[in-house]
Image (cartoon, rainbow, N blue to C red):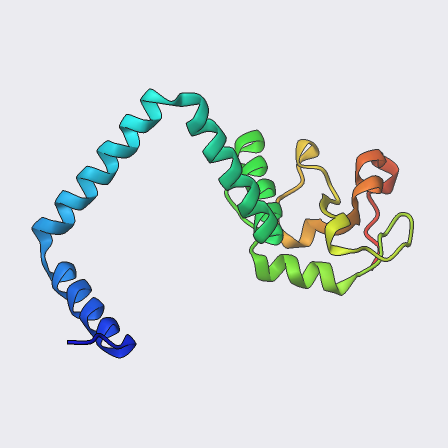
Length: 152
């Protein structure tokens, strides 16, 4: 019998469906992969760190917006115990509402963009969309308290 692409695809589909329904097979597979992963991590800690680091770098490159939002939300939670989060949709609205930096008045490119808290979290500001503005990286790094004015 000669296998065509269609026959092969159907056979794969049947195999996957059969394995999906087999709970014991799923448990065994999950345990084996988890044990193998833990064993590799213990035996090769340097290589494991390298693999994790490469994975993080690829994720950041493929999802720059998600990474920025995650970093800001994590910082707000860890440093200030804040639980409110800024979602991707909210950040997109903030970003596109004012495409110019409020300090230097230059147009902001996506790669040169940072979240800026108008009232800093350390001074009691919230990590909410009302207290966040888009700012270029260089201005955000060198700003001072006189730049707290939100320019719309």
